[in-house]
Image (tube, rainbow, N blue to C red; front, side):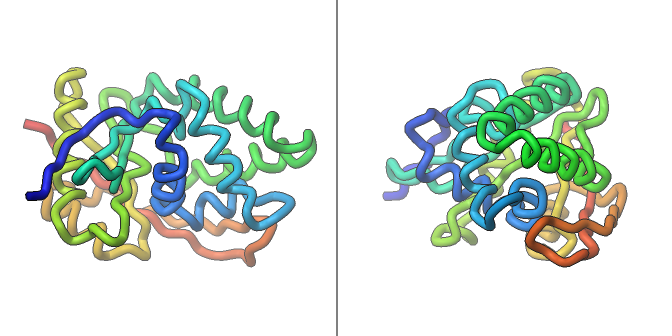
Length: 210
């Protein structure tokens, strides 16, 4: 019998959690965090996951457990998190990268916010949500979203939001099925150190919580 439970992520989840966080936005992660070599984004995420209090930290993610195995995760961020998340990311960047490389990385991160913007006031955003590919299609993502929405409501938020990759119609359709509606389509020309200029598209979606 399949048993599904939820728990906060811990530093011990590093090996399972970081690939999932990366899979939630690999193009954006590579554009921002690959500066001197093409695997740098994952090294950054590993360092950030082990720290507390940041956008990519273990303590900011809820894990979904299937028969004692971590198979997915997701986080919630709000406007009050924007400054501490930004400062924590900067600290980790200067720890992982050399100075000039760190500066370039921070600049790319700020440019990425033109399309993946921080949460608005009084709105809670789901972010870094991902389910292991082997278990997609089993309704685990729906269950995880429901858990995150409950967390939002307990904190007094009445509107949930999220960003969906413009090239991921399957995810967009799922969120629409769960009651999210497209509020804005965002596009921006972006370029990383190892990528050609490309148009990045994102759908910003919102849902009123009961």
